Image (cartoon, rainbow, N blue to C red; front, side, top):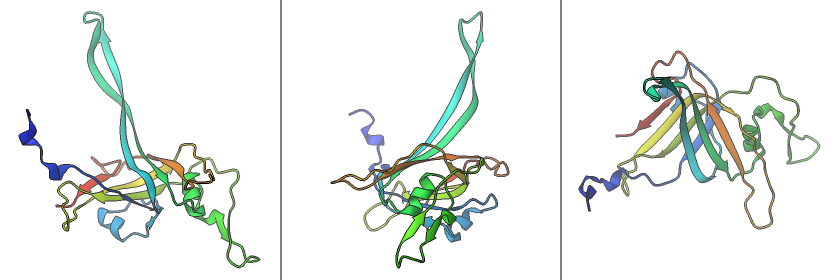
Length: 194
């Protein structure tokens, strides 16, 4: 089989990832992500997808009848997942509300209420860290891959459903925004443990 000798099977990444979320902070160092007050948002279904979507523009000239050059006019970076743990906290993240909207009810012994209504114009920015397996992971010697981003907002529609024989899930999509001061890694970093 052509090219089969060049395949390193340990570089094939398989496995789940953990998502942590917290308050956005443009001054975070990479070490800060490991010590910051980021909280796990629980189990997911179908994994985590990080998407880089450039918008390309053709520069056309009459003599070619085609593009003489292609340039990138803009880019959109997103992180998508489906949350299985349908907690009020996760619902607030998916619908871009602040955690302060969840209050404990003092008249009921053990209940919480998520209050949602008209939001402010500017969405709430969050810092996100995704922890998963890195290439080269073998049984008993796990290596980790981390994706850290300092500015993310929930930007897509989301719904929660309650079905008889299925877990309550809801999708969440985060738009990753650049940090101007992080030259060369404005959207974040993907780090593989060696």
